[in-house]
Picture 1 (cartoon, rainbow, N blue to C red):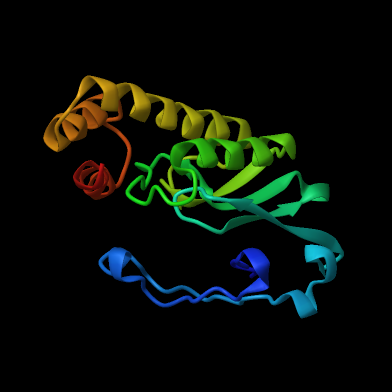
Picture 2: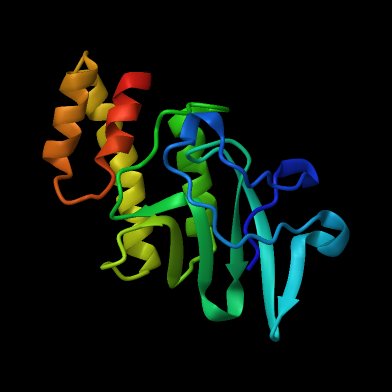
Length: 177
């Protein structure tokens, strides 16, 4: 499985980052370097895989993997699916940059999107995941304007999204914002 390639061709460091140390579970990772993926393209079992660098999503240097003939995007941290989004790393451009990354994925017109953070009871419908990830960012902006304290923002987000998994991400976001 191709996991990630950082902008500029650097390989992904797959150990836990200090900010996320309590949340990371290391899975099987294969990092691909540019020397083995000319033009950010690979072929796997007859399918062309295209690595697309999208910039900032929930962290800097995000990328997605597009499989055009399957209508598939492995969206990593760009799309979430039924899980509260990690907003504690404003990074390069913050939520505006994340919206731009979502636009890049949407322009690919995928049918399926594998989100990096997913409620396993939900399907992988790309249109829904794209719309819901965008809406969450919009709602974040709205609720930040209406709530000046971390607890106020946390409670408002939980009220707005009571069925999403990962409330700890909302709390850490509230503390960081």
